[in-house]
Image (tube, rainbow, N blue to C red; front, top):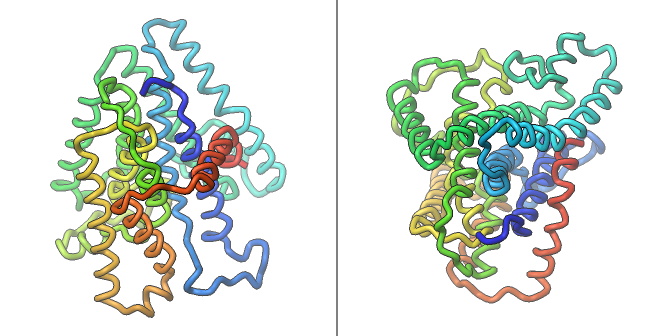
Length: 357
């Protein structure tokens, strides 16, 4: 990891932002612009917007970790905070003020103030028109938590291990106990963010010239994995009685146990795109493909091919198979496709603005 700037990560950042936009325009509000909008079942595709936010979290942690020197005094901390807020606040306030102007009279001053001060998520005073900006509340918290870890030189490797163990214990022994869901959301989200910073902290990653086909194979997995999440069926088979959080809003439980299924993929994305090799690479790849293919097979066995078509599994299934072929065959990618992939790095510079606006 000699270079701090990585164009592959710019591609990841930019595409993830576009996926979030696609999710909210096409998947959430398919008829917002055209009342007659309707895609056929075969080509209909639900953008994995939520999983893309988790990709943002681990990517954010990695970028902060790789670009931030240890914070040892007030000057370095002040500089770090200034850079973070300068990046986040201007566009956020512009987007928020624009929304307030368009929805003038629809929200009280208390709601407006909570959204301007990033406290809307814990107090559930979210301006719905800017609902997707809930993740900024998490980002700011993680930015400030990082100051503590950096100043006291706390190992992020140990932190991730402790946090993962703590979540495992909570799930095993307290999955049926109602804990304030926002606490779990913050903890699970921080696992993703801290893992990114942990990957940046480790300086001894062996350099790996991963082939372009395998890199793209890993990259396109983010477009197909969300529909094959096996969490629900596994909980049902194990007959676990999960805590009921129906009384809380989605924003207060936006990151849940289900999202831990995407954790291996987010790690794999950072490793593959930064050419860092881990001895766990094959385990991560195997887990992802085996679990997703098994889930697809179970859907087919339990229901039917017609169900797969009707419930929009066709496109993600095709992407999954394509990814597997590209990973196994490990063939040479045409130069034109490589150039197209590389050209997407320009999206990275505008990703935050796209995500906000």
